[in-house]
Length: 211
Image (cartoon, rainbow, N blue to C red):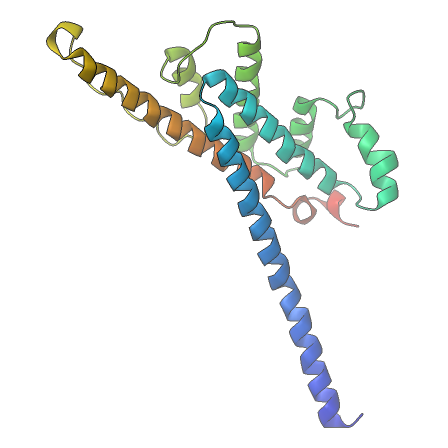
């Protein structure tokens, strides 16, 4: 091969190599966007506080499961005989709280993400033992949600006139609008939290993710 042909071949090779990271980033961004859309859709489908928290913890578990698998070796043998037994119900990583602690301990997720995830799990667990049906604007819900790092600010409660001084239909409309605003804030905030966790790449953050 002459010098000109060698130079042309080298340029083509360099172009192909340079194109690989871009293609990888594009695929990763598309997958991350698809997961975020899925999270938003499922959270938005939860019309009650209970169904919302159930969906949130299930989606959180899904995101953490993906991270845990990525942290360990990727070959089929390791996944089947080492990783899967760790993640099974009887395995040491079978509990969601343990997987969450592992990801935080390895530096895969940040402290604020860890604390928010723990709070969501605790809220769901509390509702499992509480038969009451809460609204999104009840103090029992607004209090804990106000502590989430992913929630920048909850909508302020509107100044409502006393029942005898305002039209009941207007009061009901204001209260309904306030509840919708609070619910939308929760849906978007928790979507950002879970999607952010799901979009992480542990192999770039932890030496355990390297082959």
